Image 1 (cartoon, helix red, strand yellow):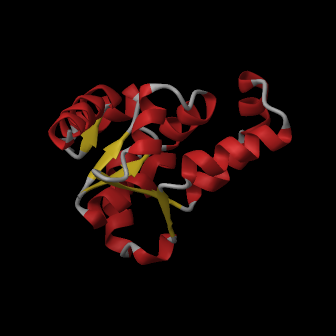
Image 2 (tube, one colour):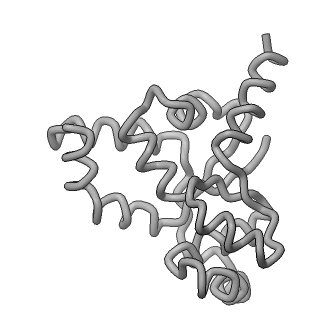
Length: 152
């Protein structure tokens, strides 16, 4: 089973369109992937819920229903389980890219797994620093389809 840290922009996209590639992977990929996110993710979603509801044309109840559906296969991790050294290393990597992504990178380092993100700035910034633990939706979807074909 492949562990993957899920970035906030992936969750936002899935909430806005559960039928997208991102939604398909998150909702039906639990046989192939273990999805994780730092607790900070929930704060970000709640901070932006009005914007998400407006874009998605969701009522409060619809938003909560989709939110719960999208997050049901994502294990939310308490920040305290990752060692301080991983946060310091992550902050060094993210400081001039996007410090808000430090928790995601720290958990990637701690769990020795990839971060699934659609954030081009983050992908490019980390890549320039030699950080190779990222995966795009396109690459993950190809892997997802390959694994689904093998299963059948």
